[in-house]
Length: 113
Length: 114
Image (tube, rainbow over all chains, first blue to last red; front, side, top):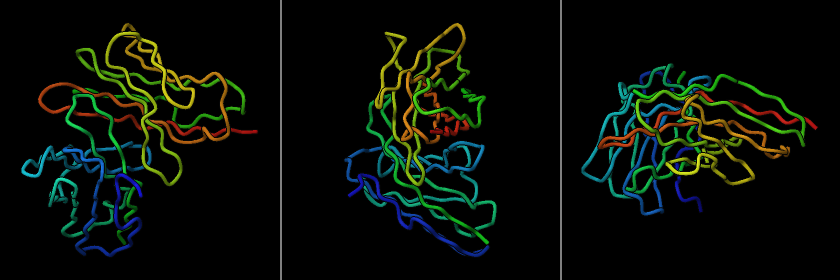
């Protein structure tokens, strides 16, 4: 099994619907992240969490919310999806060492019609 | 704020040829630098990273990168490309402070032809 698991891997939804993307990890890392990837834009940070009680906004958090249910689980929600949120979403983890490697899930492709 | 520029969106090389992918960064102090690779349908995997010390860094899969402070560059190289190297490559810079913010470049897509 993968160390960082994302569900669903693919999702098509309609404008205005609520969507949740889930991430779980078995690496035992404290830090978890949600990134969004768009062609030509690279990866941009949506939210990050350093532990269960710590949630922080990234550079593009508008329209998104997150929940850290446990050390191993970090969910991303789109309360009312819009077409420009169509993208590939990645969950990542890292340990608490400065400069630690990011470990990525395989991504969740979201299409909002 | 830090930034990363990967000037080449797409590169095509022949199998067995050498490869150099360019990366320039902007940051006021010595940054932490990374190269990640993304194979089709996969997440990103770390190839190598530079924190300090020797400016020539060796990574996995035969890749290396050289940190040049004077040029604000961290170019990725491989002497002989294999067809399995076809992927998208991302340069990233990590900055300091209480939170280690990692900023990614826009990526370079590598195509390998027989």
